[in-house]
Amino acid sequence: MTKKDYFILDTETHPIDASMWHQLAPYQGTQRFMRSLEGCIRPVIQEFPSMENDGGTPFEKMIRNMDASGTDMACVIPESFLFCSGGTTPISSNAWMLTGVQQYPDRFIMCPNFGPIIQRGVKEAIDEMVFMAKECGVKVFKFYCPEDTYINDKRLWPFFEKAQELNLVMQVHTGTGYVYGARNKYCHPGLLEDVLYDFYDLRIVAFHFGWPHHRELNCLAATFPNLYLSVSFLNAAATWRPKFFQELIGEAMLYATADKIVWGSDTNGSGMKECVDPFHSFQIDEEGHRGWGYRYITEEDRAKIFGLNMAKLLGIEPRKRARGQA
Image (cartoon, rainbow, N blue to C red; front, side, top):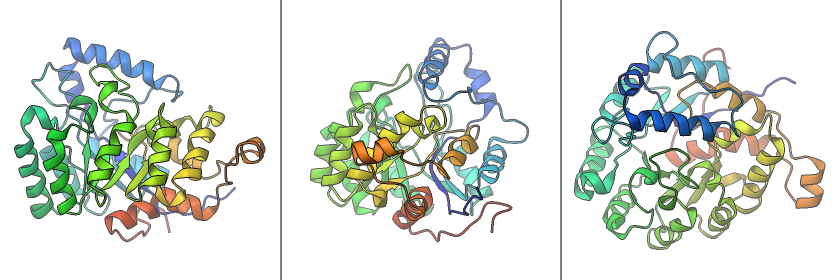
């Protein structure tokens, strides 16, 4: 089967410098984090992704993997993961990530992480948001609630209000915390309901299908036009757990529709192609269609999910940029 040249925009990538991992390796928090990471990846990804730079810089690694998978653009998101170092050193930062965006402005989309918001202070997070929106042209950011606080913590209301005023897209981790140091109780998708009611014009992308609470997230997406769903991380299971992925994508398409589902890999580059390739041909089976009412995935659906929906949200021209692509 010949692959169609879809415009692909990855909403969640995390370039990480391997030297930082090695520097933080002795910390007890890092060791516990890595042990938990292996546990949460095991049911989804068949091969543990490389944490090394694989030659060159972390940004060069990401570009190589984007080209290999046909991914045209990627939101690059820094991770603090302060729980690894006991609150002393972030894994990456907004300032560091900006250097990669400036190096590859046609391929990378800066998606800052302003947290942990409560720990640093809501006003300080708002100040950085305003600066990055006005001075750096930022259109999208990530709220990593598992390291911060409940999604519906009322102390965050001024932060959400400013994001809505600036017409930013907010991406948020939902479902479970997955790893040591990330709290499940902070990221239940049901907590989004309060935010959606009070900030009806704040466009929100919920990562990871909200699994294992995906049905609640789907119902919210059916109710609120400003809520979008991301397939990131769990789409890696499409090849060897197709029934699992079929339920996730099938239910999401029923409730949110293909117009409100966006692509993502949640990788540092390693494993990106293994996420993209299967979705070119993944299809709902007969049991899923006739028994559960899942819609067959059309070429139009794939095009929207792979990149057109997010390009529309961010006002980006959806043209092929990956090397070797038309």
